Image (tube, rainbow, N blue to C red; front, side):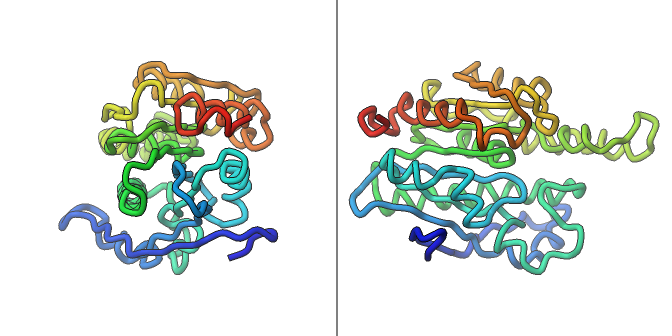
Length: 282
């Protein structure tokens, strides 16, 4: 396939994810038939190279946008990486046929739970595919926003990852959505959020211990982020991950795209972790 006069591969496979029988919201989740297949973009070299799995954020999952925001061609051509960009549930081509108002993440807590679980499932299937194609390959994760939460969970479940770069990552979706709900403490709907708090912790990376090596853990965030609050969200995850290397940029949630410090930070992290050989980054 060609995007902006550049060629990339696309892959698709049956996700295979199913909630356990009797789980709340399971039937509704399985009615979102667009989620049954996983889709991914891929830039790979003819010879074996390290792999970087780029996990996108909310309202992404579209080829041109994802390739641009992750600077995928730079990662592939200049740093010599194989790059694969999976599409999260309810995004991009997987959003087809969704009922009005159904989004991930969104107000339906159980959709958020199943969306998170399936996202982790699908990314881990991508990792298994890479290992089958190229046994022993070095593999890293690169992520943005919602993808940062997914990457943090995957990095806490999967062995043998070289690095995980979490960009503007939320630590708890329920807390995040509650903060932006606009509800006062005396609003009766606040009770629903309070009841959902244990569910939010269940699918939070704060409930798991990271398996990626300490030297392979990286986080970056915006000091003026009004969506993923630096102190309430990012620093919680930073503390839980053992205070790894963290980079800050002067900007809001989406300011990372044009922030040169972020671009330099990601490149340096890939070299520092050992995913990219130093000579390739010069």
